[in-house]
Image (cartoon, rainbow, N blue to C red; front, side):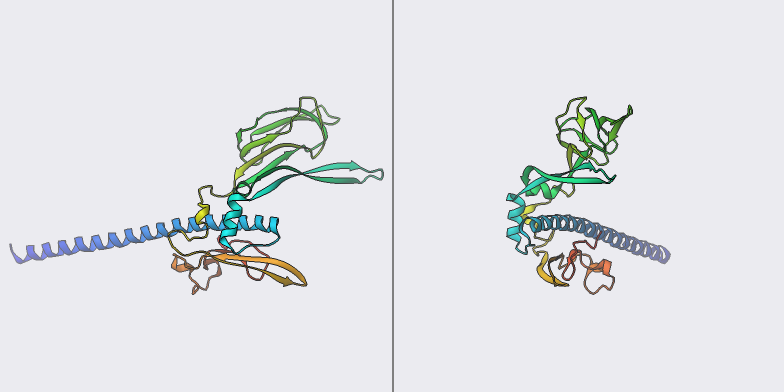
Length: 270
């Protein structure tokens, strides 16, 4: 083998090594980015559930909790009322309508359901005559699905109303075709998941892929003479180097929601 062939062979081996090095570096970078995105998605899911649970805990107990055991026990074993708001329009003699608002408790449900599921209601838009439902309990509906038929008072026009959100029908008011209905009367209730139902409640306090826990701060502060509750929950050890505290960009700080100084539960990823 002459010198030229030897040099060519050496260069070929070197080029293969460089190609493998570059490929491996790019592949490792892609895998690292995918790992960061996957972990951050799980963190956001947990923060969203923690926030919803804390808001419900505040609603039921008048305060936030910084005790993870108390929060997890509340999610798994707590019970909360489900209410329906009904408005009745009362015409007054001088031409101005009065609105009577009734809030009725229609059910007591597990706190877990209230946290993970968002409830919706469909109410009559006007006084008129009910002509029939176009769905039944247990149906899953999407936006645009027809809900019920209705004839407005003092009109021959028949309207077919549609859903503005998707979800599962949980209950419908018992009505027969021809029954009168009042504006604001509740007709249909349905729900849909608002948070990832796969989030593990027992490990809610733990950062995904780590033995560390979320930092949680709760307090009652004075704002202009009024006592208010505040909360902040954040990731204390971001896997993403761009989210570490040394980063000056506020929207790239550690994933968190809430504030220690303001009545605010917004998340910085939203």
